[in-house]
Image (tube, rainbow, N blue to C red; front, side, top):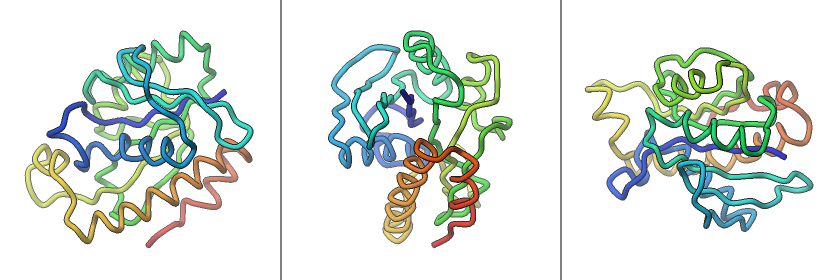
Length: 187
């Protein structure tokens, strides 16, 4: 069983913002594999289903970004998920739009949602897919809570589709194979 967590902020005003790319990812996986997120628990919304032969739990924390670790910890503890069976998807300002990067461990890199997950789990060793949203030339908060331009949104949709393939690869073949195959991806 895999726990797939997309980070974002709850509420209509955050819908499809740069910081909610993790929620967009979960929405795409949910639609592709017909997994409905119709349950409320773990301080978030979740659904269970299958991606190929892999049983998965899709989770959108409902705690707002900076407290995402509380939701993740509750789900991990309930399902007794090992760290290598949990995959976190989130935005990264240090990666250009049109790219994403897979990692199996690492610091929060200034991302408060990841920082809170590391704090709540007591480790930075867990797979993650970091989706590039580009580096801002304006105030960071305004940038990450802003929406993509029309052209950038088109590119992000392509990146999301490819990052779902990367998720499938992680689950089927392991993170090292996925890193080798996808970390050079660029639109």
